[in-house]
Image (cartoon, rainbow, N blue to C red):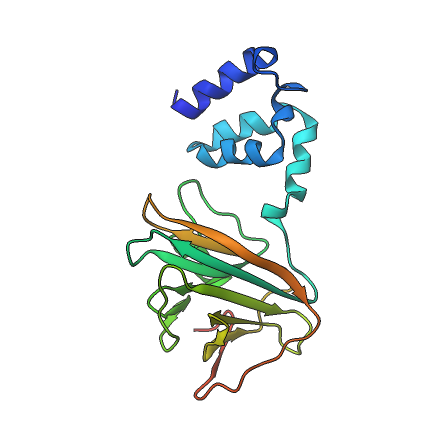
Length: 213
């Protein structure tokens, strides 16, 4: 039994002593999700999900938000990454990732995700170079336009549009971000809907087709 599971069992047995209203669910969805993301074994996650039908509400949590319409921007700033190991991207909303894997390591889903790596490469089935590299402290954005004729995602560094972008993205997507080093973190500094998409004039811009090599 690992540390997280042991503490979860203690909390379940003695919730009144910890002043947790409504047993485990009194922790609220954010802390409950943090417990789940620390678990390494799928059966541990299954155990917490079957505790109470109210946990089904977690699927509506903003962390699992599905984008299916409009124009939406996310902006992320990475910290303490030691110069490498950070990625921003989108995934087909139907994707599910194996325990211990994520969009950057689950090669079975490489055709269902796109990642903008810190060295400037886009990875979707194949690696496409040409975008600018980025570092700690810079504002990395992705804008998905679900209204355009051929839905697309465009990436930015400090509001500067990058030349390589994806078209033909799925009708429902989720944003994702990734860090490699244990000391690293990221902050979502913007998450908003836009009225319109204003593309910048980028020399040498290239549209990459989703799902094609």
